[in-house]
Amino acid sequence: MTRRRRFIFGMIGIAAVTLGIALLLAPGLATVGPIAGVIEALDTLGTTNVLLVTGLGLIGYLAVGLRSPTDTDDTSPFNSPATTPEASATEIAGGEFDELVQSAVTDGGESLLQVKSRLGQTAATVYADRMDCPPREARAAIERGEWCADPLAAAVLSEQQTVSFGAQVRLFVLPNRERRRRIERSLAAIERLEAA
Image (cartoon, rainbow, N blue to C red):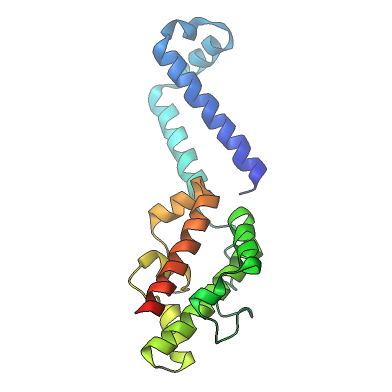
């Protein structure tokens, strides 16, 4: 969903909630100007029909809106080159990576894929080191989401797992905050694995 569309729908939602609160606190407003015409039109449709259409519209909007704009067939964290295999969780942080994270949080898209790639490669390196296994086996563990106990971090770097419905809703409602949360949880999981 584009920023403009999110802004428009946000403003419509704020206006609707404000109007609803105003009508709840001052029912006399329902007889004033265009509000009276809208209320009459809604009354003629019937409460059941209005609720049905509204519910179907919201379900359709959520079904379309919950799909991440960065979903592509190329989302594996191992598909694009990023860090060197020797990188550790503490080395992944730095000025360039911080800028990439900020871009990923703000815009998503290609920047987010690059951050996931770097985190995935670092997680695989740390996992291979800690579990004393070959890199291919470590990458497979990351892909399956079996590398850490944090289900969100595991799902973020895995193609075979999906994030919870709640996380999908948070991404839809507060995309920047949810992207940052996912990145931070993944990095924290890598650091815990490295410290183990």
